[in-house]
Length: 344
Ligand code: UDP
Image (cartoon, rainbow, N blue to C red; front, side, top):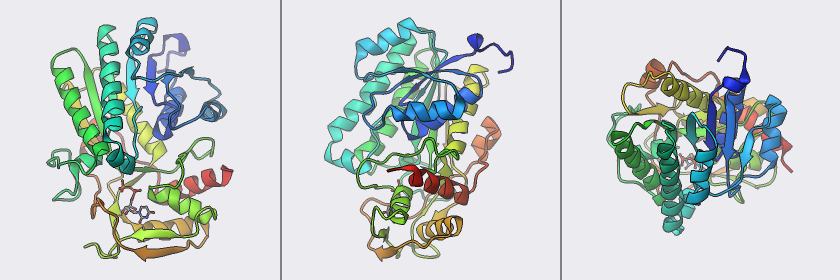
């Protein structure tokens, strides 16, 4: 990306580009000189995110507000713009809600994926990066988790949409010119260090870090630590928490691989994590250290559906994408806290 002429830079569509991971990826794409198009239906985001992106990069991405379930609009978009690559984030992601409303999750997450892929193939757009999840591994038998670990039955309809989406990608890449990379994220956390963009949980957060920062901010009275009888050193569950800016950069590395024709198969799959596991109590300690605050928490029973431990083996993604994380857990927690402080 160094010919200095922005008009000849690849044009990249980011679906769900106003969401948590999407917005951070848009920033990194723009920093690298790509021309970014966003499609987002604002179902779990808002237009202020566009301003945050602009405040960081000085560039306004092209924004299209519509639902990817609208097949006509989706096809029209690909007809009207020469898109060189797609990074597909748009999806519903609340695990608990997916248990209550499974059909909404299958319709949204599968229907929009199919529409985007059809729109791409009809217009010779062949480069696709997909947001998958380590949830496809369930409780893995061996840690750290490699990409060849067996997939387990999904714990939720949400998790199942990720498994099904990967299967759809496998079939679609086998039958067409489509080249895809699925990134299986571990636990994305943090916010942009500028505090211009970050995570915007709707209502009471389900995820650990937003609950931690809202408790520290006094919005919640107390954090519940779900389970201290897991077979781990301190009894609390272990996850691989990755800074969202590091995660965003993994998408750029994956995109470059496809645009440069460096992929080794039509569908490639990479784990994206730090490779380090942290327990819930370790996260709390790191937060207290990073922010010099005391967090009010209590130990309670396990949460249904939670696994004991998951963290990534990152050797494949490191070797093939030349990517690894640069930020620490404390960096991520401090950035999440600074973002929290900016919320009203
Ligand atoms: N967790 C917790 N209290 C909360 C939210 C989460 O103790 O209020 C724990 C949860 O049981 C899990 C870890 O924090 O062990 C990460 O949970 P999160 O929902 O963020 O991600 P998950 O890995 O479950 O998708």
